[in-house]
Amino acid sequence: MTDSMKSPRERYRQQVREEVKEKAWQQIAGSGASALSLNAIAKQMGMSGPALYRYFANRDELITELIRDAYRSLADAFIAAASSGDEGSGRRPDLAGPAHVLRRWALADPHRYFLIYGTPVPGYHAPPDITAIASELMSVLLDATAAPAAPPHAFEDHLATHRAWATNHPEAPPAALRQALAFWTRLHGVLSLELAGHFAGMGLDPALLYQAEVDALTGGPAA
Amino acid sequence: MTDSMKSPRERYRQQVREEVKEKAWQQIAGSGASALSLNAIAKQMGMSGPALYRYFANRDELITELIRDAYRSLADAFIAAASSGDEGSGRRPDLAGPAHVLRRWALADPHRYFLIYGTPVPGYHAPPDITAIASELMSVLLDATAAPAAPPHAFEDHLATHRAWATNHPEAPPAALRQALAFWTRLHGVLSLELAGHFAGMGLDPALLYQAEVDALTGGPAA
DNA sequence: TGTACATCAGTGAACGCGCGTTCACTGATGTAC
DNA sequence: TGTACATCAGTGAACGCGCGTTCACTGATGTAC
Image 1: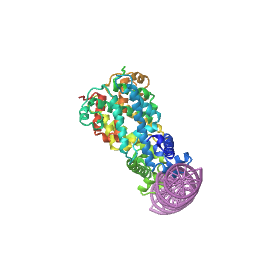
Image 2: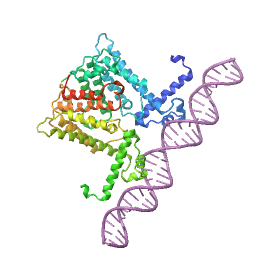
Image 3: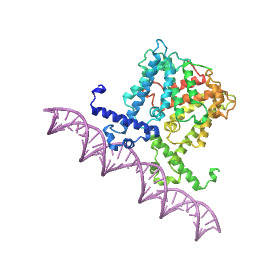
Image 4: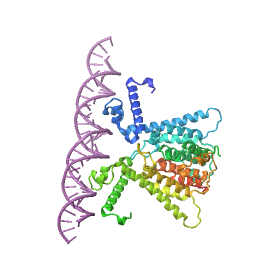
């Protein structure tokens, strides 16, 4: 159904939902996800608390929606970067692009990053469609994975037989799977420590550390 | 002042403080740090809520104490492993030991790990003595850093002039600083994703992924 | 074009809950002579 | 060894707050004939 086919009421609903989420993000940006309050959002919108229950079944549904949007946003950023990189004919894929996108995305809204990759919310379980976006992310990553720079390792034997997460890439060599995983874990390591402020008093530039890790992954510029 | 010099009252105080912290950890283990409640702890100990204010000025002081203990516990685990490894004469240092210790420590109590390295508590700032323990951690790591396995990188030029965090090791070569940092960020990357459950549906063994990263760092067993 | 009806957004009151924290007080424990 | 006093652990009542959520209701907006 296209937008023009929606009734005015339906359009209005969507609009209010978006505004609720917008205020929710502002609140999260200020004090983290644990402080997210439906009543506070309503007050900020000039509405009474119970009014929000016209738009979200409960607090959990709102949070789930935010998490979904966050994943979607990151996936779209990856995809956009990948397709813009591919434009000129046979330009071979590489991981430097996604790496740059990831860092920009994370720094743009640290709390959004932590909502996805931070301390898990106790008792929360992501619905299947969110898991699907997460694996879409890995898929884009595998697309961008070229010739691995790392020496081979026994772990690749494990990956050769444990590749359930890469069913979209049945032909990808284990070395590529390993590289995609390393991209993921290493960059996440730098980013989460940086965003949590663990480099604060150390007097080094996190951007350069990040870049060094990217280069180590892609076999980019050395000394 | 040794324990035997303390008055019975003082000893009792310490004991109750410890019990409060113990219950606090149990509560954190169950529902995370954000759910930590003084009243709930008091009830669990068979006391009234206000009684705890004899032992902690407020909730924040308790959390600070928990964070301090967590850092201390990890630092001690590192030191113990390092000294036991050094026993037999000239056994050269390596990072595999600390890596193993780190993983065991993290898995033993994921919420304790996240209290330190997870989503930062909004508005919380660690007091200086905790920062000191954190840099003690880096120091132990630098002690264990031997010949780097990675090829040199321009980032080491940056580290050569930005080494405020390694004042305890003025003679350490930049390559060693870089290796210690990589140890830190890469293992943290794997661990935090693992503990947050991001590998859950992927069907791979996080322990092997971790080991592969350790080997990549130390130049250990390849294919 | 006008009327009758259905839909639905939003309100205000209320429920029950738990939180951190303060305060005045009781009673037990330790200390000094 | 016994008495007088100071210290301090713990209680119960209270304050003020905000939370998620339900419910019966009002009033505006859309729909059908």
